[in-house]
Length: 182
Image 1 (cartoon, rainbow, N blue to C red):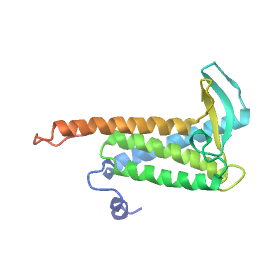
Image 2 (cartoon, helix red, strand yellow):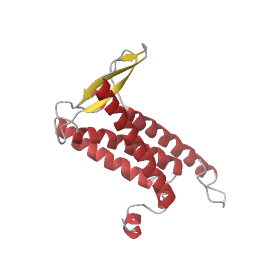
Image 3 (spheres, rainbow, N blue to C red):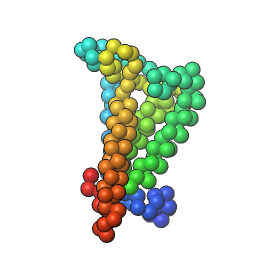
Image 4 (cartoon, rainbow, N blue to C red):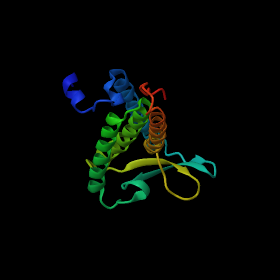
């Protein structure tokens, strides 16, 4: 994408204005997708059932979103996931702090990893089931690497934004610009 066009989507003051950071964000996103898809492929190939009482590995196919919600409407769920992914991309490109942008890139990677399952896995385009395989505790529910990236990415981004906002508030009266060192 030409530089002029790409900068039109990234607001002034956003951390993603830096080409180096955009490359790092792309790397984080790609790494999350790769680790997620490889781990799912391994679980599908081996069908393991192992673990302790608080953490087990067990294959589950989830056609819904969090907690199986909307499982009976796979096309609608896929459309919702596309919208959520677009929102995550926009948030990552608009983030003012480098650390928040990198955490949001992990969220994008997680969203893309689960979206890939919905688009590419059986029974077909937009109706595929997400491969979940990590179970914590005896409460039911399952997740995968993408889900972990989304959850950790959101929490990390919120923490980074709160810290950066606090720094900016402290230095609001100062003539020195606030630098994102986190």
